[in-house]
Structures are given as C-alpha cells and as structure tokens.
Length: 602
Image (cartoon, rainbow, N blue to C red):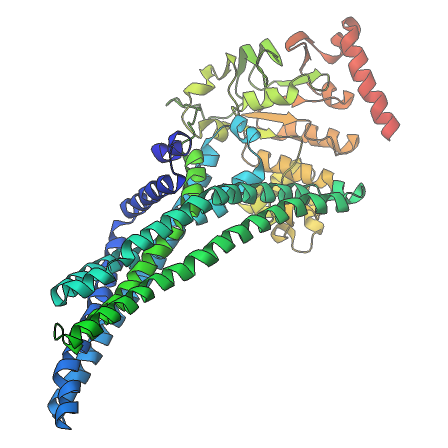
C-alpha cells in the first residue's frame, strides 16, 4: 500500500496513465484479499461470456441451416426447429447461472472489502497515539473510514464482469478472425478508439476526483463541528454563519460533481457509439463481400452479432476504468492512515493485580506540543502506594497534559513514568488500562444505557455497578430514572446535567477498582458538598487506591495527603495544603483566587 500512496506524489507524466496503473494496483490488492470469491465470480462471468458467444454461433448456424433453406425450399424440418429452440434455451439457462454467480460474487466481494477496511481503519485509529488524533480533524477521520473506503472499492462491482468478459471478448475476436478477416479487421478498429477515449476521460477526471474526496472530508468536518458545537452556535446566534460555511463546501462539492458528470455524460455515450459504428462498418464490408461472393449471409450475421457482443465487454471495461480515478484517490487516502507508523511501543511486563494502591514515580519528565516551547520540563515526583496527592497549578500550566502522560495517552519527550517501579513503555498492551483509570474534565457518555455506560463492556454484576454509583453519589438520580440502570442516556448523555454526567464518569472508573485513580478536575460541575461526600466515599471505598487529583477547590485540595504545586513546568513546592499556604505566596495567591472566583459564581 505504501508504494501506491507514494505514487501520488512521485509519479510524473500523464495523470491518466498514472491513474490507470494505480487503479490496476488497487484491483490487485482486492484480488489478493478475496481470492476465492473473486475466482467464483470470475468463473461465473467467463461462463456467461462463453455462452453469450455461443449465442452468435447458434444464430449463424440457424441462419445457414434453418432460415435460408426455409426461404429456398418454402419449408423446414420440425427436428431442426426443435434443435434450434433447444440450443437457445440451453445457452440461456447456463448464461443465467453465470449471471447469478458473477453478480453475487461481485457484491459479496465488494462489501467484504469495505467492511474489512473499515475495521482496519478503525483499529488503526485506536492504535495511533493521541498526538496523531490531535493533528487530524474528526470529520477527516470519519471520511477516511466511510466515503474513502467506499470509493476505494467502487470498481469491485464491475470487476468480475470485466475480467470474465475479457474471456468472452477473446473468444469472440478469435471467432471473428476465423469467420472473415476483412470484416474482423474493420470491427476490431473499435478497440484503440475505446482506449483513447478512456485515457482522455481519466486525464480530465482524476484531478477532479482528488478534490472531490478532499471536499467530502472538509464537508464532514464542518458538519461535525456544527453538530458538536450546537449549543455555541445557537446561543451566540451563529446559525446563518454556520449555514453559509457548510453551504460554501456543499456548493463547491456540487460544482465539482457536476463537472465530473458532464465529462461522464460525454464519455458514456461515446463508449456506446464506438461499437455501433463498428457494426455499421462490418455490415458495409459484409454487403460488399456478399455481392462479390466472398462471404455468406450467415458469416455477416455472425460477425455483426459478435461485434455487438464485443461491445458489452468494451462497455464493462469502460465502466471499470471509469471508476479508477475515484478508487485511486480513495485508496490513497485510506492507505495514508493504514501506513501511518504506530510510534507507541510496548513490552511484556505485567503489574501486580493484588489489593492496595500502586506506587507512582515520575522522573525528569519533559513534554512540549510545539518544538522549542517546553510545557513540562524536568518534572519529578513520587507518590507512595495508597496516598492521595493533589496537583495544583495555574491554567495552562500542564496539569491535564500530565494526566495524559501518566496514563500513556502520549509519550514524554524525555524522562520516565513508572508504576510500581515499571516503566510504562515496558508494560504489555492493555496492562496499564487494567490498573489505572483516568476521569477527565469533560465527561463523555455514550448513547446507551446507564449500566453499559458504567460497565463499558466489562462483565460487571449490577451490585458492583450500584456500589460504584453510590460512591460517586449517582445512585439517587439513577434510581429516579424511568428504567433505572436500563435507562437510555441519549447521545453524549444530553438527558443529564453536567454534574450527573461527571458522577457517572466517576462511577465508570470506580467500578474497575483501579490501583491508581487519576481525577482531572473531575468534580468541577458538582457542588462542593456533594464533591466532599464523593471524595470521602472514594477514600473509604477505593480499596486503598492511590489517587492523583488535579484540583483547584480548597475543599478538594484539603482532602489530599500531599499537595504538589506545579509552576514553570516543574514541581515548585510540595507539602500539605496548610504548609503551602503558610510558606508559598504564589500558591496561596492561586488557591485564594480560585476560591474568590467560586464564591463570586455562587
């Protein structure tokens, strides 16, 4: 796949020829992925093609041995008529079998490839680090997994038919050459004309399809942003501007689609017309040969009919080649995702799954989003098992970034994070997620039941779900829902308040009994009294879990065994909340400012 994706930028010369080459490369990938289905559907197409050519032989034989003798003698034998009927019916039945095998195989092959590549793209999304996702808009990712995959395998529908009809075309051409060389030579002139027409079409359409697929991603991105920010759009009265932003992309996509349609509208009739012109040429030469006694009427009928048969393979191949520009563009876009190197490496180490909290050791940690602008620099601290530590710092000081490093959503530029003395990079895949839970600032809920939002596919009994809900102070409002744990929450949990969503997000983490629990301002939407009960319940019910709290409220900070003051990308001070208030003016100023803001909001 990498060579095909690279050819977009390295290939020179005629884009039509490059598209033709890359289109056949995409088909090669399809055949290698689904060889058996391709074989069955192609054999069905070959059977259809051979029996279609057999129709021409039956027609020519009937003309010479039944139709013309009947005109000469005024009658014909019943046995010959029955033989002709039997031949036509037998050919038709076998041809029907070939059509079923061809169409069924092509459909199954196309949909299997689309499903396979959608799964592979999605799996690749899950493997790629968060840093990669932050560089790519959601709309583009949706387009890669949907529209681009669909476009990549668009030629599969006509592929078995085109391959099978090549056999039909070869058989038909051989029979034409055997029957009459002059008429065959005139008829075969259609092939270079069709090839020229196809290359011309691809030359003009390939750049348009490239832009169309890019615009599909941009349109999806605008739509996703508008839906995701519906509240902002409506509360700030931005409906007209968002509609215009969407309309701009939609109109551009429409105009490009019309351009492609115009080119296709010229190309398709040409494919239909060229074989018909060939038939007229054959009939003209055939009439001349009959007048001069050089050919029989049956030979002219046979070759004319064969040429009409050849017209079908020409059209089917034209349909196949006509899908190449869109297919190549879609496949390149999908390949760029699948070929993206997964930088996250894993080892084989395992963590202890026994009771009690996990030890956390951060040493020399450094991280930056922009080269040369360090957000965290030489950050070091240790959290003993079972302890609760609060991390306090100014806005944009790197607190949330630190949580992504502690859970290895991203890897640091330098330094190391250890859990129970083991470097996170040495852990086996999935090992960290089984021992560490992160509750982020923004609580995300799925359009599913309360039970499934808390369990997230884990085999958790309802008693444990209710226990986690009680600790998170969420059992009351869940019990009041119409169907309790079976209540549907709607997309992103829109039927709940912000505080309710945060409490369900907490319960989701608690039900897994993590040995290290990281809360990134996870109770900001909850009032202080409820927050105090939640944190007190977590300390008593978390089985001695180690907790790291990103906090700003004094009540939350005061529950911690130790406070780490983050300033300038480093731990500037550490100690109890009271100690830091006494000795560190910057810390006191910060937490008091938070307190004043909270009181003002209340």
